[in-house]
Image (cartoon, rainbow, N blue to C red; front, side, top):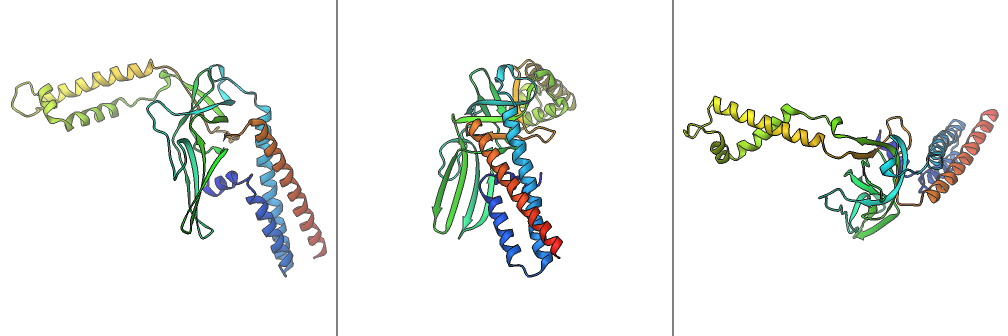
Length: 296
């Protein structure tokens, strides 16, 4: 998805769209050429219509999708509620002076002008007491409940984040991956394992230099390949018997994928209010453009 559309989604509920409407309305009022006036008002109508559809769709996704428990969730589009957690062995993320978190998004300004932005892409867990689900945040619309602002010299950094163990609401495509569904590259794994063994030449000679001449012959190397193949086969067998992994990710059909630290009821009200606002902007922009077209 183009980064412009992602930025528009993330900024849908923080007043950026409203500021854009106001700027276009001022431009239409001050423009001398009728074509520019009509074009600006028409742009308000088009943008507000798209924004209304996005907000309305998110509102209905939240209110129409029942909450599921991870342990019994159906495969497909689901809503989960729990707390943020880290994958086993993973360290908390950190950016600027934020507390330990599982996800963050930042914007850096210099003298009031944005010069940099970005966000984390690391997977993390949602835990609801029944089980745990891996969250893949790529392409998610994240409505973080925590923000930290830092200022140094003429630089200002705004960071939105989801804290470790903070409440988490999520809606997206739920899938349970079983060991039998894993796609395993046997040849690639054998090649990588042999590469690891080559790095420790002393160990390699100790295991496979049968005649003790200090070199690995073609026959001895073939024995090493067979040993690597057996070890990879054992590893893959263990992986296929591993417990199921639950995953929540962006739906392939374009339905909303939302992660939020806010209560779902408050989030639904938020989207509903913005849907009304964008609908009003559309009606106003369309009516004004139509009126001007009849005059000119």
